[in-house]
Image (cartoon, rainbow, N blue to C red; front, side):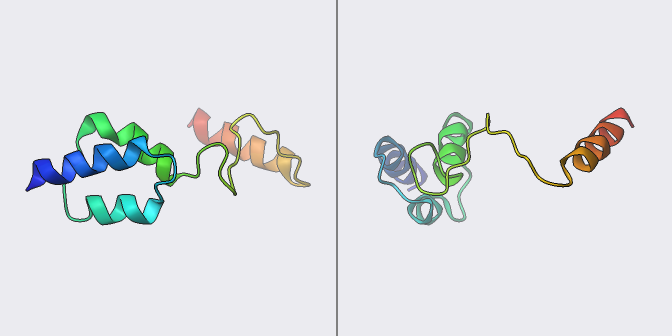
Length: 78
């Protein structure tokens, strides 16, 4: 039965219209094969072209951006 779910999961990941809810339905309670993890994460984290996508190359210009960067540098330095 686990291999059947993996086959379904692989097929769902090929389709661009697969929702995170569908991925959850297929994965719930099962061990996710390591080879499928990157694609599952990509699908669930709003990939490019879907509403709500945030590009990793976006520059954030928040009023407190300087403080945030400083805090991050301090944390990484520890």
